[in-house]
Length: 94
Image (cartoon, rainbow, N blue to C red; front, side, top):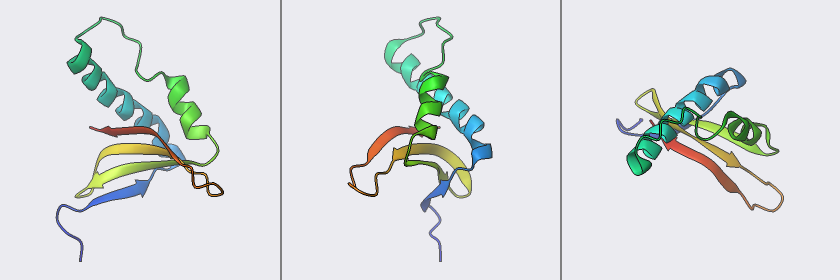
């Protein structure tokens, strides 16, 4: 039986990636504005190129963070099955 507040990781599909990238940038924008104030710069953080390079990297694992059926964030990992030296590229909560 699933717990009411159980947090799950759900694999993001290829079709999910554009919206995932947008949600990641929106979450980062809020955090940057809170930390730095409004700069008036409309350049998305992180840049699209950096996000897509992470998605396309060897061993990339992109997951939605799901609570009660709703996507509340995401994580991008780089998994090296040989060395087990893994990396967290992005983590965000909306």
